[in-house]
Image 1 (cartoon, one colour):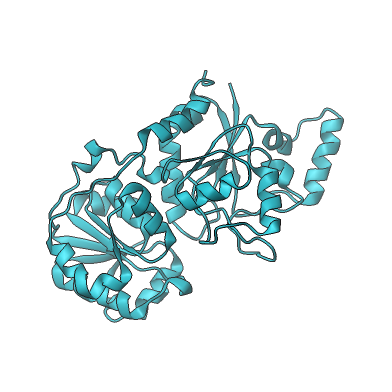
Image 2: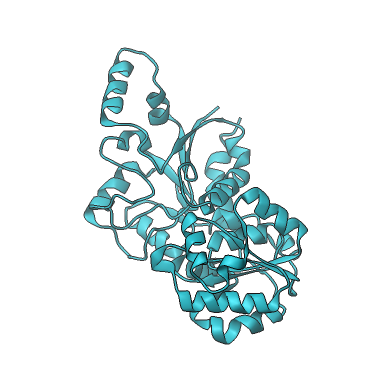
Length: 338
């Protein structure tokens, strides 16, 4: 038996997309996670103060067990996806992985699974290099979801394998053949309410085109910011909302829906549930997924000229998976399963 830490990237996250990622990782790594003893540790909060860590060392010296001791000494600590790696960490307080000098020993020797980057910069600042050198394993190769992240991790002297995002690992050729090539009757859309990602002109045009081409249109709300932004868009307040993954899955499985939207993992989740999806590309993440995995995307600036014709056309979902890379990453741990 191995002692495992599953670093939970969905707990305390305000973005339900992180839940999609975590569920996908737990499903794809179940042969390893379920056959060993595991505990969870949140990444979005500071789990242990400097006082708690110092106290744990005292208790260990006195040969008394502590919770922190388990996390410090676990055999494998897996960072479960999302865009956690921040190239610029100095003076940043909004990073999704709460790493501080006081808790680095808890996260020491972590292994990335399908992790991406917070930004598009091609190198770390000095503080970022120091932090990640302290916590990332040198023994195991890391799974990353795009080439930019691979280069960044390799710049730290670690080995990285571009496996693509684990949300795509189940989208095999057999799975994709079950996704319709033709237009559905109805559509689920999404908009991204984070201020740097908003574009009222193009997003309003997307809503207009989708409403014109489908009978029933609903909105997947992935963050609370998405809803407040939707309310400000023409026609947005009239659309029905979907808030939970349970309801989203039900709609996809029962309602003959396509997906069109800017929320990347909202679109991937639709494909997981056999719905034709078109992700509106708004940043480096969707572009990276397209380059690595042939994700079906349409660039936001192309909405006016091309969205309607793409909706009305037939297109096959053909996700490109590097099965050898995925197998290579997982093989590091499968031999130790008991």
